[in-house]
Length: 194
Image (cartoon, rainbow, N blue to C red; front, side):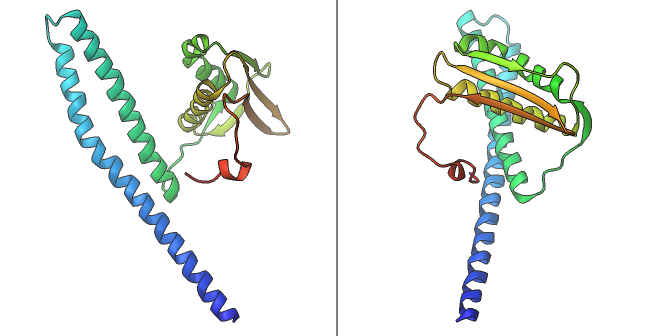
């Protein structure tokens, strides 16, 4: 009986690993396949931007195409990074950085959206620098995602609290908001992969 259970567990684990590997390969292949036509689109947008004498409405359309193609490029890169992170192949470049400055920079980069959102942002940061050893580019993306989510999913007119605390050789950033819809999932569900 125990041998049968063990064999069943081994088979289930093997299937799960195979499924995960296939998912990662699919994401990698799709993101790679999307890059090729997107590169062509961006090249044609570059050519259109160099055209002389285009009417103003056409120039506006070209600007929109540039913005949307850059957004799509970022989404594809995110998808590619997700597959690398899932497979354990994502490399980090650790450096000494100031987490307080990174938080301020990220919020400054989102300031226009924050101002337009109608949300009240309440921020508490330490007096001095918060030195950490980490990958600044990846942490910046995490911070951007946190603020983007707060902007997208906060109840209109509510407050968003950002607190950076440094104590006991640790730094903790929290971003808290009230959702614009009633959430009906558990903490375990929201933390599941994908």
